[in-house]
Length: 113
Length: 109
Image 1 (cartoon, helix red, strand yellow):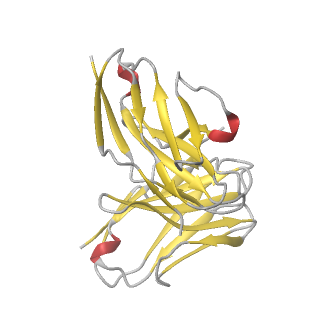
Image 2 (cartoon, each protein chain N blue to C red):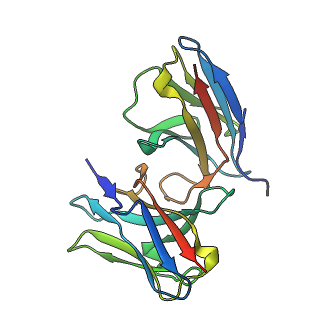
């Protein structure tokens, strides 16, 4: 089976712009979680989607949003980018919600200038 | 709020020596606990989970509810064990998984 695929892998944006990141889960996996990874804060949970519904949400401002499509693919969007949003954004899929068994992608590295 | 701490950012051991990666959590209930590992140039992946009570790649982890700890142990470290290790907690089923800050393990040949 193909692993979790995240696109784009690298991107550079400027402050105030918005960005959309995409995640294709492993075939058959219906749960997708998003994490922000930075050297200072480590892995911070953003949100989890299951069957197109947001199941869990982390403590991030409303500028961070996500959605899941009927084919389980997920996107996350960050609007009005700030310098502090520079990070590696990791997507993880799971066969079902609530198992704790996460299969991670390679991440999308966002740099905000 | 629940929290996971890993007191060591870096840990170096010699090949063949025992290794223990510490993990403590703050949560009053009965969480599910995991260890995830990221080898160089590889994706973050699940190593083991406490409910499985299994040994993976020679690693074991015991949940100590009294000390709220879930330390990862291996009796004889191998060079291929060098990696970043993350302890993770899920408060209840269907809750989010939160991660500790990670410990970078270096096994010296």
